[in-house]
Image (tube, rainbow, N blue to C red; front, top):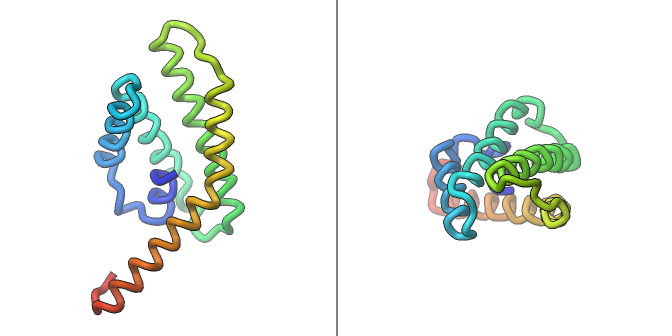
Length: 131
């Protein structure tokens, strides 16, 4: 969600090398195949960047739908990569559950993202910083 939100609303704040590093960190923390999540995160960022002009200024429901479609796309990529690396088709049900929960939790994460963004802007304004 973070990669999606930053790619839509703060594209200059999260560069591709940082996204790649986040993916590698994810792989290390969760014991995944090294580079798998990095490729998924980069795919998410690329998908959003290619659609950013369309997404700019859209209402929340449209952004949520875009998130759902992008998530389905990159999770399919993850499943295919994991199946290829494992030499067999990986079970779909755990991934479907995770994907549905991720999509359903997007509005809460989006609310938190914007709340923190507004709070940070207010603190900068109090200190008289530009931003």
